[in-house]
Amino acid sequence: MNIFEKFIKDSIGVSSVLGEILITGIVVIAFGSLFVIITSVDKPADHTRLSVEEWIDAPPI
Image (cartoon, rainbow, N blue to C red; front, side, top):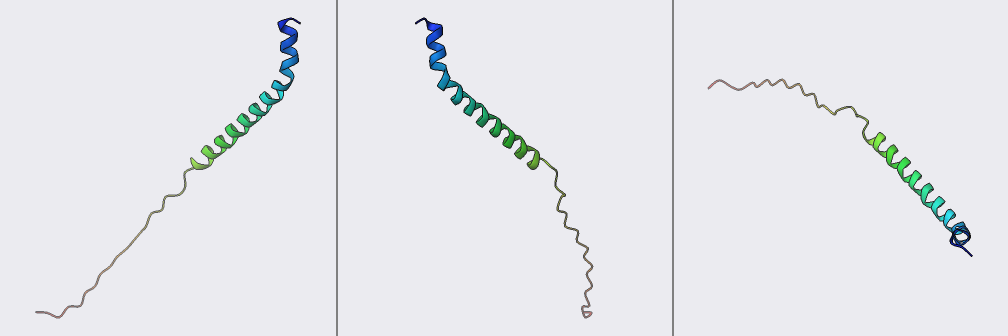
Protein backbone atom coordinates (compact mmCIF):
# COMPACT_ATOMS: atom_id res chain seq x y z
CA MET A 1 0.00 0.00 0.00
CA ASN A 2 1.55 3.28 -1.05
CA ILE A 3 1.19 6.59 0.77
CA PHE A 4 -1.54 7.91 -1.55
CA GLU A 5 -3.83 4.92 -0.99
CA LYS A 6 -3.29 5.14 2.77
CA PHE A 7 -4.12 8.87 2.73
CA ILE A 8 -7.38 8.28 0.80
CA LYS A 9 -8.38 5.51 3.20
CA ASP A 10 -7.65 7.67 6.28
CA SER A 11 -9.12 10.93 4.95
CA ILE A 12 -12.75 9.77 4.83
CA GLY A 13 -13.33 10.49 8.54
CA VAL A 14 -11.29 13.67 8.42
CA SER A 15 -13.53 15.26 5.77
CA SER A 16 -16.59 15.16 8.02
CA VAL A 17 -14.65 16.72 10.89
CA LEU A 18 -13.32 19.47 8.63
CA GLY A 19 -16.84 20.08 7.33
CA GLU A 20 -18.15 20.55 10.86
CA ILE A 21 -15.30 22.92 11.68
CA LEU A 22 -15.96 24.97 8.54
CA ILE A 23 -19.70 25.18 9.23
CA THR A 24 -19.02 26.22 12.82
CA GLY A 25 -16.62 28.90 11.63
CA ILE A 26 -19.13 30.24 9.12
CA VAL A 27 -21.86 30.41 11.78
CA VAL A 28 -19.56 32.19 14.26
CA ILE A 29 -18.50 34.73 11.63
CA ALA A 30 -22.12 35.31 10.58
CA PHE A 31 -23.34 35.90 14.14
CA GLY A 32 -20.31 38.07 14.89
CA SER A 33 -21.01 40.22 11.84
CA LEU A 34 -24.65 40.51 12.77
CA PHE A 35 -23.73 41.55 16.32
CA VAL A 36 -21.35 44.24 15.04
CA ILE A 37 -23.96 45.59 12.63
CA ILE A 38 -26.67 45.71 15.30
CA THR A 39 -24.50 47.32 17.96
CA SER A 40 -22.99 49.91 15.62
CA VAL A 41 -26.33 51.44 14.62
CA ASP A 42 -26.54 54.98 15.94
CA LYS A 43 -29.30 55.33 18.43
CA PRO A 44 -30.97 58.66 19.09
CA ALA A 45 -29.07 60.58 21.70
CA ASP A 46 -30.85 61.14 24.96
CA HIS A 47 -30.84 64.88 25.45
CA THR A 48 -32.54 66.28 28.47
CA ARG A 49 -34.05 69.62 27.68
CA LEU A 50 -34.81 71.65 30.71
CA SER A 51 -36.34 75.09 30.78
CA VAL A 52 -36.28 76.68 34.22
CA GLU A 53 -37.98 79.90 35.18
CA GLU A 54 -37.60 81.06 38.70
CA TRP A 55 -39.75 83.60 40.47
CA ILE A 56 -39.05 84.46 44.04
CA ASP A 57 -41.34 86.70 46.02
CA ALA A 58 -39.14 87.70 48.91
CA PRO A 59 -40.16 90.43 51.33
CA PRO A 60 -38.10 93.63 51.05
CA ILE A 61 -35.48 94.11 53.73
